Every structure is written in structure tokens, then in C-alpha cells.
Image 1 (tube, rainbow, N blue to C red):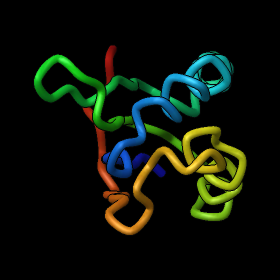
Image 2: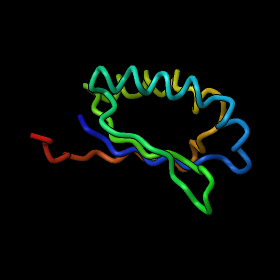
Image 3: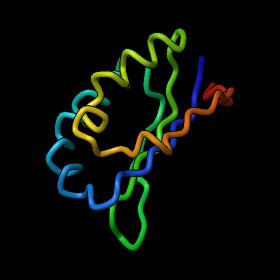
Image 4: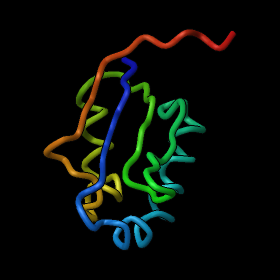
Amino acid sequence: MQYLIIAYDNDNALDKRLEAREAHVEGAKKLMAEGKIIEAGALIEEDQMVGSTLFVDFENDDELNEWLESEPYVTNNVWNMDEFQIVPVKLLPKD
């Protein structure tokens, strides 16, 4: 199932984001190679990272939740999980 994820950071989380960024990017690249993350990027306001947006493709909600349980931006309290958005989508095939 494909999803759009919109994850704004908690207030004043930039330092936490930068500390967890290497682990986050490493995990994201692994999931991209597996086809689980289709596309990802930072949300920017006033030239500063304030969140993330991802298109992902997981078999089911359990697999999605398993990823979130170990995602560095979740475990390091970067993303504001109270306003976290997961929207089912159907992306246009690339080929």
C-alpha cells in the first residue's frame, strides 16, 4: 500500500534533527533500495528544515508501523507525532 507521509518536527527540534539525521538518511537509503521509500525530502520554511515528507510503499499497516517504531526521527522525538499525517495514495507508475 502506498502512503504519503507528512511529518512536521516538534518545536525547537532542529538540534535533535541534525543529531539523528545521519541514522535517518542511512535507514531511508536502505528502504529506498528495497522499494519501501519511493521518494523523500525535508520540508523547508525560511531556509530551515522543519519536517519531512515521504512517499512510501509497505505491504500493510503493520509493516509501516514497524518501520515507524525504529525510525530515528520518531525514536529521537524529532517528528511531532500528534500531528503526523499518513494518507493512502496511488502514485502514477514511473514507466
